[in-house]
Image (cartoon, rainbow, N blue to C red; front, side):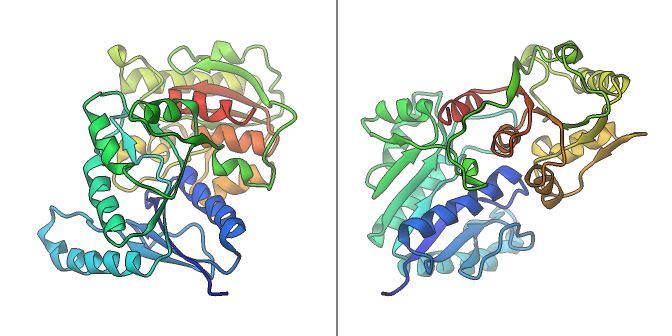
Length: 343
């Protein structure tokens, strides 16, 4: 039987462990569904820094890419025809980008709705089966529901990662089943008998006082925090955020813990989304920071950790998957909903 060909449109380019592990586990799930010999074309904005490799996976550069820069005109012309040709020869189009549909977040990332309307028109022009694979959707402005309808006009299969996404689609009369985040499959396990979350706090309220009840003596504590959510929007300040983080690290050291900073994002262009740039400010005597995605991933997979202060969604997920106690610092509905589905 001829191997299926699948084009994947995903958030692969920003050096974010979340996105890379979703891709890794998604491809494994799709192989289970369509066969081990399935060929994949993965669209990305950066083909130079590839986290996941596989003999049946080829990376393609997105169109458009940095279109405002006139130097990229021929690059974009090539990418446009490459897009058409790749879609044409594919049997299925898989779209899983968690950021496919959203209004805004505390980052500089732009709303991609119009771009996805354009892409789905191309998919349908070639009469391809569109598989919306475990999406996360966050629409807060009613005017964007009209654009939502255009994206989900016709499709082969549709699944979302949380109840909130399901409810949003119901507003445009689209039904979707809820399936858990593919990262929950990282060690082959899907359901969990025990919840390794020892405490949950809201990000704006989080302080060293939330750690006083735990014994950290000679334990390795990993700190996975992101910028922009540790203070209320009305009081947002880099100085206040930095002061809060330094206070937490100082407290842990006084409790004789070894503190290691765990960035989940090394975004090349969006500094607000780059955990490494934020956390490296706190590196000092006896405080380390991991330098790349592979180092961070190995920490979880090899359980080189006693306790995790987890703010990034996939810090929580990987802590749960690899049975590591963690304190959940919740900053958005996205993290709330994704973890609900697993239990």
